[in-house]
Image (cartoon, rainbow, N blue to C red; front, side):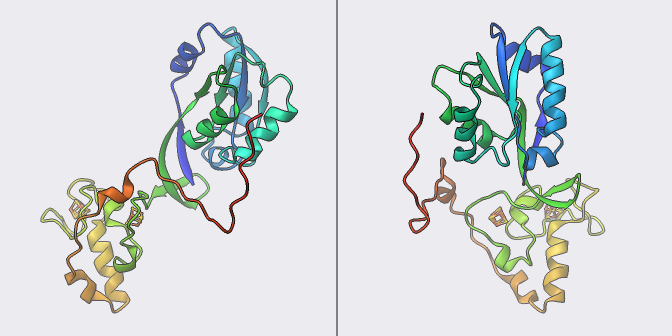
Length: 225
Ligand code: SF4
Ligand code: SF4
């Protein structure tokens, strides 16, 4: 799940300066769970923008706003959406990009949120980062705990010399990621992996933008309206 946080409303108002009608997009998946872009947040944004003199022409809450087909469905079925002076998206950057691709080039599509990280959901409202999407996963040798993500120094061979009573010297509230890896590998009878030297990551794998085309699942791309 993608974690998002709300942008400062003043930044949003500044970006909307000179626009009269605004259409809102939320996302009924990640942003809804983050309490940044669900039904409640759309209503709140609508109220705030109205108070600030904008006219909210309507809103959309797709199941997942990063699905192009779902964004297209909104543009095809909501008459006022293509006519709005601007679209404000309460979703992650992928949602903003998706809506922007579907909208006419002349219609500004703006983010209302900042996208922060890819999260594991511990429970409702409790998220933590466990993967940085590096493209070269080391979890196969680290007991499912990512040192690239969970060690503040990103050490692929650890621990560093700063462990204090098992805790991290950089984030003293957190147990050292490498101590956790050690404990887990020990439980699994795979401690020999601690002696293995992991080479630096091949950063060329992570050159952006990245994309995937699953040939068997590929369908013709639907044309823009
Ligand atoms: S090594 Fe870490 S950051 Fe890279 S893919 Fe695996 S979990 Fe994600
Ligand atoms: S104490 Fe552990 S988690 Fe913290 S920086 Fe050093 S190796 Fe990384």
